Length: 128
Image (cartoon, rainbow, N blue to C red; front, top):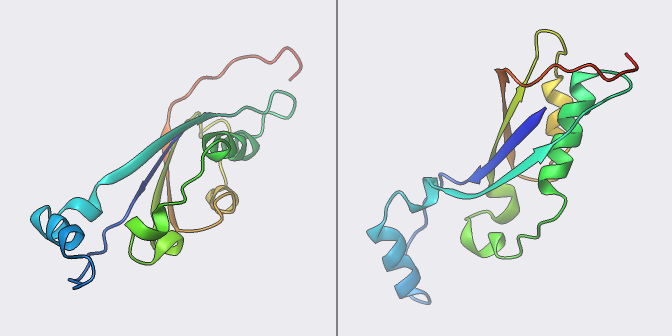
């Protein structure tokens, strides 16, 4: 199933004499830390087993496989652990259920929220 991954933080920052310009900018835009910082897209399938969870896990791995986020530690209070990840999985979940706990294990850090949406594509694999 296709998956959309959005990372954000809703924590606020406090003033610091060492970084007045940065803090001033954050205070000026109070909603800054609750905005989406990046969006990653991935696609996954399980052609042989028709397993919804395997497909979702593969889609999540595909979404995060080719990125590096070294500045997150500076941008989000709490660094990597302070990230809030919203994982949106669109899949035919009635036919092929997805285990949300298995999907969460893909992400090495952050607070992960997985949202399942009925949809996606059901297509014959030629095997199953």
